[in-house]
Image (cartoon, rainbow, N blue to C red):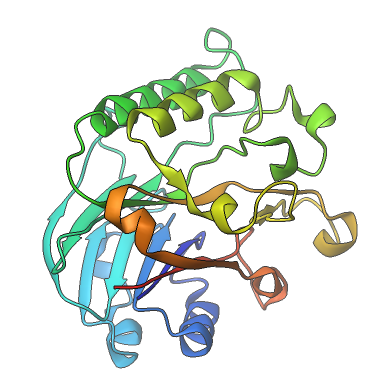
Length: 260
């Protein structure tokens, strides 16, 4: 089974490259973040035409939004409010084999890494704390995917020294993510198959005129797993060429293959 995670930054605006990617990579399940569309306006027809009959949404107009599109049956779903303000940032399902699949869009956290000066940064840390408490309650094999908006390792950013005070790579965020990982005994599948310092960037800012030449990437997108799900992982891939496609997202898709 191939599972993909991709912050698409507006699924309707970028539906052409989504369709292109699905035809080329042919994943069984696609998890999208930042879909930016209410559920009724989601482009169902494109996905169903490609065989993704099982569609679970948590949408929001113009902001946030997550979706799971699957060729295989889904037998349950949930939506957690880890932001505590009803923003559409999570959707989860259970597959027929019993594995939970949770798709999350963690807040970016604004520009200033200070809870008092920047409430958005505090919201991000609180979001991670709620996820940590949830992780402590997990009992079965689970896969957690999404845009975590944190690049935890030195090798996960283009310059560790220059980004230490930049939101997404600050010590307080890295420590919060480490607590989340420890709470659920999560395995970071990207780094299992591509140990640091291997290149594994998934995001490049739109601000660069030529993203490939400047190459100031960060690994903000992750795929973690617990228990039998982690043991079933057999490969992990990132798709850098997608960053150069027409009307690209600033994120690229990541894919993990599982032997189930």
